[in-house]
Length: 226
Image 1 (tube, rainbow, N blue to C red):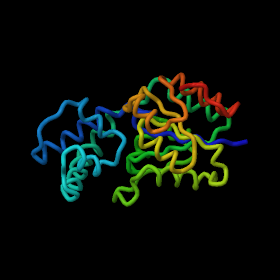
Image 2: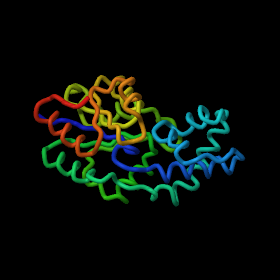
Image 3: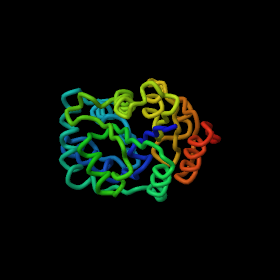
Image 4: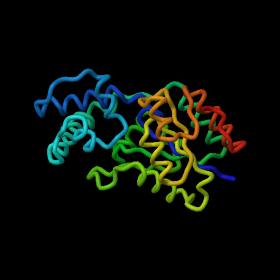
């Protein structure tokens, strides 16, 4: 029986911190905000940018929209390419495809950026479905993005055969809201505590562990990592 595995992008398949944090700082500089260390800005990786500009900096909705525009000004031409696949990710995706898995990407990154990253890093060929945010931010919450991926792949009536893999609480909570199980990866930008609190069904600490857990789930329906 076919199974659908959905992957988050940033912090799950790719190490995207340099491009995102530098583009956030670029936006903050343009708006007269103080400089932050790159590690302080890693909190921007995962949630919708406009919401996090408001939460992190206390911006108004209008200011946050300006921040997103400035962010994209740098990200589109430079930051998008300051990105790399985690070692072992391509091997994992190839193994899943060889095993007959339907592979999808479910990311809060705008769809044009997600496509360009997947093509630039060479893993678009492994994706059967891609669900992402819209540039106008009318669809940028993770539950809706995950729900669209499930619907597009034809698994609405087979949710027991769907698994979401991600590194932040947004991925885990989005999976739960859609009635599917989740695997949290702790090598990304979220902590083990964050993933556990959000209710991850299982957790792995490396790409190699993740591949093993996914193949185990595929063959037995169980995951043995916590």
